[in-house]
Length: 391
Image (cartoon, rainbow, N blue to C red; front, top):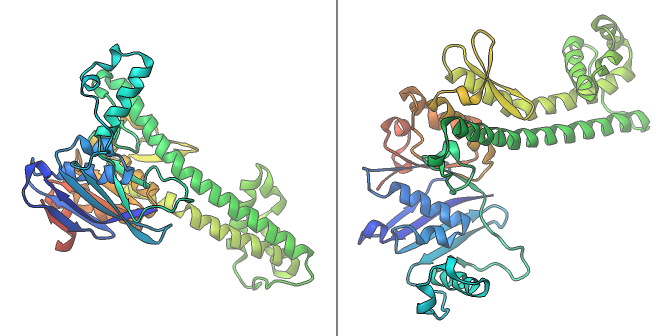
């Protein structure tokens, strides 16, 4: 996990003065007129996080220095890219001018190595230890203006060749893939909680040491509901073992061993509810933002739209603004403590959504770092001046 702490860019779009910013841990907004270089700055940061020299070499910039704080290494790492720093491999001028498609296999390999040698590499300070695992990229998300039809990377889809139906299919697949990532982590966490809970129940039953049991005056109906929910997740007919609510209430007051068992199960269920809380917050947030009774429902690893009359539709049927909102919020939820880089988050969004966007994202994931370029005053309306960077 990582986030960007500082960067300096020289020669952005031919500028004579460098751009040097120290970023905030939570929210950062680049604001400026069209053509000022906001999107280019985002792409530079994305290239640094991807350690991608080819990507930054295509951008109008002379030099870039990006500082990244690594939680796993517990240190700040500096990456430097300089267009003047060549890799030092002799250039074969004649080969460089040849069309690679006209070359044989051997000469094509030479051509590829030559072109790679012409691209300056990102240099890291401090260097990684020789025995450490190679790092290909830092975890982060980049959402360009074409985000509806690309994955979690800077590689854009050639969407000019696809029909509207094909683009909708790409969006649906991309969104469900993001949901699958989030839902899988939640399910794994819940499974681990339940396994630990069952071990605790077994230990309590077999151990001579007696755990503290719940007070018999605790509302047995609340305990019954949570324990029933736990058993239903174990098997379709699991809750039948619990019996009726009335019989459970009578046994709970008099049977200490039952209270001992259900105390552990109740503790497990409370932990499970906490694990599912982010999912519930996400769905409740979407329902609160969408209009005309429309909401999003989760069925396993897929999301669908539920209309006010109860009909179910694909997420591809959503409006452009709704699609953007879902994509942005799901990406932020999956970001953990990493950076989320967004170009023009306001695209297709109602002004009220723009005003609430930053608060909504951090309500769902307060740990991620937002780095955004925008033209919208509403996105910045509630932000401190230190979080806004004029380009």
